[in-house]
Image (cartoon, rainbow, N blue to C red; front, side):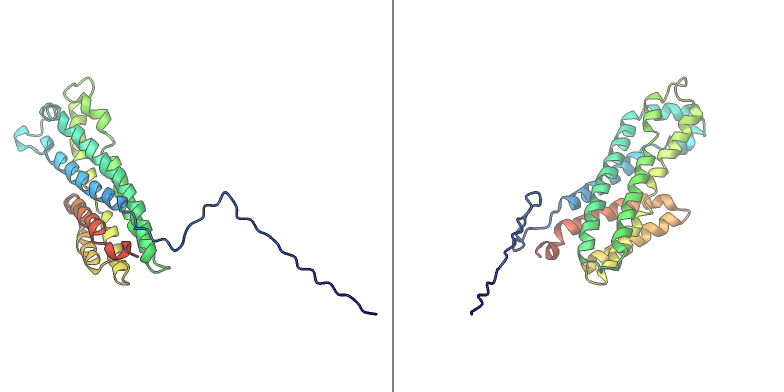
Length: 242
């Protein structure tokens, strides 16, 4: 007798999950640049905050002879400058955090897999943003009470002048971000010129921050941030074209 053998083929169907978006891998899109624009804004706002702080130097005015009552009266005449300092400082801090997030994503895309440079660059920016928040942290407490000894004593007003003339100038940690750029540029992750700018500007900013002349980092840090952000905004076309 013949034995009939039947072969059974089982076809298993795996439907695509409807909650997972599908993407066309062949489609090329330009890398976003909003984060670099945020970095440019952070640098410009930072320069503005430093400039506003420079216009408020009553506590260093030798003609006032260290008289705290006169210092408080002098500061009370510059409330608009103090408001500008606060707003610009906080805008710089907020935009810096956005820039930090975008920079981390950008550097991770081209840095060696085991590189810590993207993380260092990110924390340098975040640390500086935190310093700016702290530097503007006493503004609400003092700005609208200056000149009224019942609200703000002259001694405290003099202390406040020291605070906003020093703390927001501590941009030293930003230097770490510049040095991290240089480290990544050595492997081709960013343009060579950006790495050199990061090493020069970031190195100087970090050294000033470490030294007893740390407040000078408030001059170099914001300018360096503007240059680097512009570099990624208009000079990173090779990466965006990938």
